[in-house]
Amino acid sequence: MTATIGDQKNSLNSDPSRGIILVVDDNPANLQVLSSFLDQSSFEVWAARSGEKAIQRLENDNLPDLILLDIMMPGIDGFETCKYLKSESNPRVRDIPIIFMTALSDTADKVKGLRLGAVDYITKPFQHEEVLVRVEHQLKLKNLTKTLIDKNTELQQIQTQLIQAEKVATLGQMTAGIAHEVNNPINFIAGNLNFVEEYFRDVVNLLELYQKYLPDPPTEIQNAIKTKDINYLLNDLSKIIQSMQVGTDRVTEIVSSLNKFSRHGEAGKKLANLHEGLETTLLILGHRLKANAHRPAIKLIKEYGELRLIECYPGELNQVFMNLISNGIDAIEEIKKNQYFDENFRHIGMIWIKTEVIGERVILRIADNGSGISEANRTKIFDAFYTTKVIGKGTGLGLSIAYQIVVNNHRGKLSCHSTQGEGTEFVIELPIR
Ligand SMILES: Nc1ncnc2c1ncn2[C@@H]1O[C@H](COP(=O)(O)OP(=O)(O)OP(=O)(O)O)[C@@H](O)[C@H]1O
Ligand SMILES: [Mg+2]
Image 1: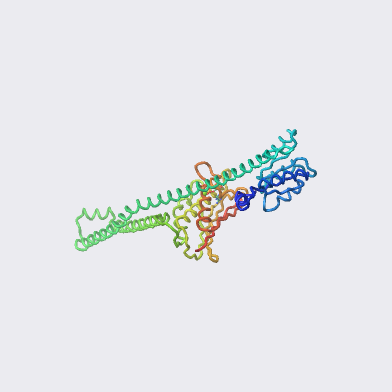
Image 2 (image 1 turned 45 degrees about the vertical axis):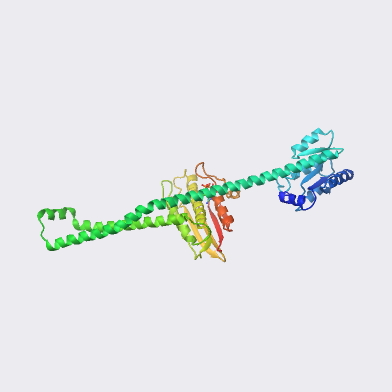
């Protein structure tokens, strides 16, 4: 990077210098005049006698705030030096403003200099007041630009955080809401099923008593027993009640999982079992793993190691698992879509989830054999709003939210390895305490 605003503040605040100016001129007299004048105006002045020397000087860690550059020099001239400093390959120095020094009459030179990326020019012979005003003006502009860029980055981060908070809150509220709504009726059914079973047993006992003491019922009853196949009916009814009980148990389990997923009403870090978080997330995403009209079911391979409880925000980590696993499923669907022209293409989508403890850290790997990510795109995936999905499908926030949660909120690491066309692996590393 170029000299940052922090550096500038240092040079402006910690010493009386108003900034560092690199003067590049092969003429010692010019150098002398400018240096002493700028020095008197409280600038720190560095001098270079040629373009080569200037470039050499800019290889140092410390960078000037502005460059005054002569055009006519032996060796590489001012234009060449400017071109080099402003090139894409020089991100460290290309934002340092350059002011050309030119003879009064050279309009073509002025235009050429400005086209090459210089911000201004001063004319020889130098008018001290003019030089000072132009230099001050450019330094002010540079500081303002830097402040603007910083503020913009800050605002973007705040925006992502707000959307993240909103997403977490909405999903949490929704799952908590569903859990709450389903909770009452399911308790009602589960509770009454016990009575149904008890009453059914009473009725069966009563029937058996009838059969015992009235073994020869009238013909109408005998016919009814035959046509209704009463033994089968009694046997089956008892099975139906059992399966209804299994069903209600399952719904009760899901409600409890939804409650755990939203971790409703929890604030602050908790000791939590990450496998529980993974399982509740998988429960919520379960429907997406099933076979559909476009592809066979996705195979889920879990290799859970022995984990200890870790200190974390469990609701947030569930959000991370949710984003990574949904991305994996999306990538598997993507590979299928890319091959739609090939009728015989059979791709079994797979998602691997592996957990282990290494030292004081928990490592979670979530991998898929989906479309993969090209090397060029891999640098962008954690950026907010970066998405390759169609409008309406992706907001491009999943990974940037995951990154903030893992790296900022948990002091962990989130990395991505991928081969295009083969698949992707995300690795989450979290400190146990
Ligand atoms: N497992 C993966 N395999 C292939 N590409 C992936 C994978 N995970 C992420 N990507 C790429 O990274 C991009 C950004 O992912 P991110 O989760 O941030 O946003 P998104 O999934 O597009 O939208 P959403 O906000 O709904 O999550 C995706 O659009 C996709 O191109
Ligand atoms: Mg996503």
